[in-house]
Length: 541
Image (cartoon, rainbow, N blue to C red; front, side, top):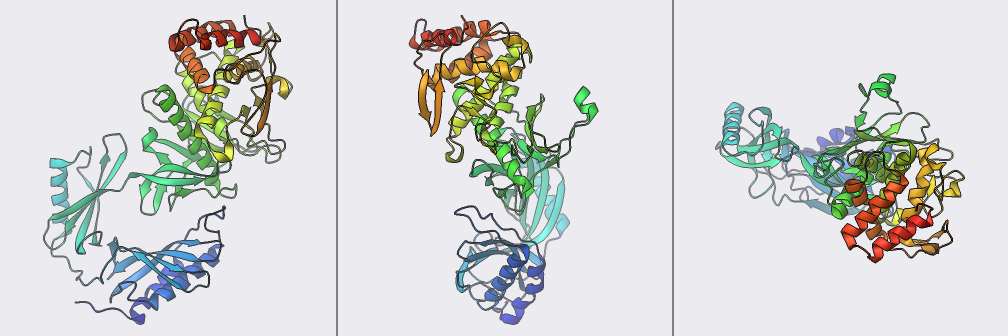
């Protein structure tokens, strides 16, 4: 039987706690305020001393120690320090607690699930090898995980996750879950009786968050457990995001598409990635991952498409590409984003650009529009269209939907690279079709398709959308009444995936969208008639 610990028993942990790294959330509005590492260490040390003064609140006993983890400091100075617990040097699973102190640094209680002091001994009666054999035999009989016939690790722990705490062997086995997600299955075996207590999956899709540059604090699905998380989302095909560390692809990669750098996948000790500022490299990663998520969800929810290849596979993002790189691209397997020049343009990871680049993948794996001539303009227009639709779909208050492309990273004017209501506003794009369109850069010839889509969705004339003034003229002096974004998006998607081919021209796109509108809404419907009127309004007859 162990007795309740006093001050001396807890003091052993002080040096250990102060030496461990700690992380703090960002100082975004409503979030805990960031503090220098030294200040966070002081807060953790003070919290440990406060814990020493309240051993009863900690359910403390002889042999216990407390190791500091995450430290959060609110804007008013209140602090919340997370501690892991050990007993005779053994990790106490489920023994973690959070020490709270108010703005005046007064004791404000403890959050924990342990209901009573730990009084068990820590000498195992069952050997590690026996516990491991038990788990492997059990997995062979019952587990749905493939390849879990070997043990990766076995550790003696105190299992305090529920009911009466027990001394247990934690046996971890690897493998692959049914959906392709890696498995790290931890099975707990009673170290006194040899009976299996429970199993838990350590590789999970976690409800995390990203603190982004352009979209605020957003939900993200991340992978991992404990204090090790990866910016990877198994719910969306395993899509993940890496840091290129400002390196560029080699010439071999550029010429032959082989030997390309993948970058380093973002990891975190918490479920939060980024801090809302470029001071944290993971911030741009959070933007890119969020954009991929919203694009995935848009295509699945609205068009029933299961990822770029429509087979459930995910892709990946590379951020911080090159030095002063003011662009982003899709290369057949992944999306890549530059950091901008830092003067006129910031990192190109805004929501509409993420949707734009991922939509190139959808185009490549449907109509596969050739990236030159009028079909190249349609290719670019398709990405602008769906990037814009993703922005509206996400309904993010920090980046509300509009028909500007890239306005978030435009540091000077916030008008972006292009706009769809009047493409010629950028000084180079086409509002109206002419024989010259197919001879120009695809980013400029895309204006005809962008203008058509805007007119189809919103109509001609002036209007304000989410606080942004839009004003779209027609090339033939007509007035067009839009049919709404949802109908316009469905028509374009069906035209792309059902009727367009690699060399479709603008005239062919007119036919394709008329067919799509007929399929979806009927021959002679308002929607089909408006498709015809919108094409005529951009001089495609």
